[in-house]
Length: 350
Ligand code: SF4
Image 1 (cartoon, rainbow, N blue to C red):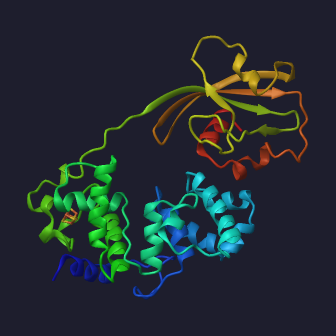
Image 2 (image 1 turned 180 degrees about the vertical axis):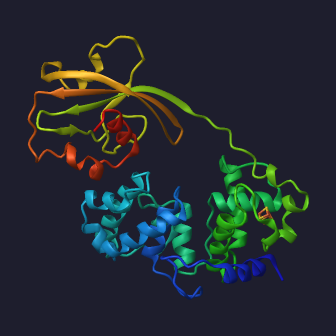
Image 3 (image 1 turned 180 degrees about the horizontal axis):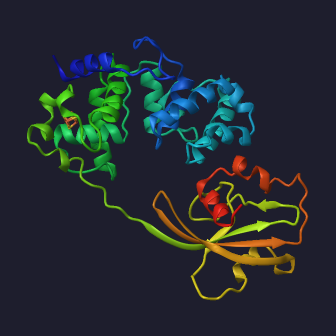
């Protein structure tokens, strides 16, 4: 039996039931469901996605329902999945689909990849998993499998090496059963050819896996060089007299760009307990009733390692309930959509 057929027969026996998968593995799939589930699965564990996906589809059963929703509603259904820019892109894409494509995902790879948040991988997943076209997909799971099968000693971190991996992915998907092969590879990467301790004994590809045969699995794929950026800063918890906390849309920052967060900026640690001049970009000192440094917290976001001091500032302002940048203290947990701000609020005992 060829490797592709061995993989398919393994998948049909081991295929897990998931809320976005129809019972029949040969059925065409709802492309909206494939799109949403694949975006949710980026950087998030399957178990967390299962719960969120079912809730999402109940609330937004069609692309047209999603396009009509407010950003706040969409983000609240994303809460817990992290990387909120994914949810914002989904909403923007749904609005474009209703405006330009009658509320459906377009037909070609080129049109799909032009939509916000849909890259080569997601376009390939929509075309192959939902519509059964001979289209390739490539993500971290497939890169790991391909690197081990062929003992490829490099990662797809440049145009030429990325093309190399995509060509292998195209070879695997050059079959009428690409929809099964692609999904089988994804499942194999998640449940068998795992990063640590792959279960090679039950792998359908072990007879052709060069890393397994030569007992060199730990060498493939090669390790990525980590490049962290250290960030030392100050986060402001600005509280109005009537108990509201100020949030900004954060278009200038290094991280969490264009997300609603507490204001923050680079700030060298010092013994000084004065009101930092830079804080006046957010709140005039004339409006400050009292302030105090509450403590520090550490946080990592993508390649940033953040070490942050927290300054709680009580102001003399009274803020109207209509101002969207100010959130009342009782709604903080519900409306604060990122863990960076939640940690700062905890340090400030809010
Ligand atoms: S034999 Fe092991 S290393 Fe090779 S593809 Fe299968 S699980 Fe991965």
